[in-house]
Amino acid sequence: MIKKITKAIQDNRYNMIASKCPICGEKLSIDKVEKLLKGGNDVAVTKVTAGVCKKCGEILYEAETANKFDEIREKLRKGDTKGLRLLGKCYAM
Image (cartoon, rainbow, N blue to C red; front, side):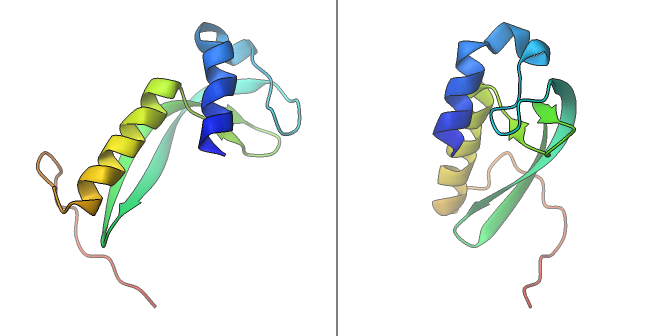
């Protein structure tokens, strides 16, 4: 799904506000969103700018942002938390 989303943004990278949602066709708006990235036993939280559909909730990221997500996930899988700030504890139920 990320590859499809990334391609949609690459096709219209500099005009994301005028882009339409690939799911419902509604116009996207630019907003700050919080993203949880999981890798191994760790989770990183980041806030990024993305295209957000106010109708269906679909979120579109720029290709550069999606690539950064992949890099962070890979670092987490390797246990490399250098540059990340500890926020607290996470519990599973």
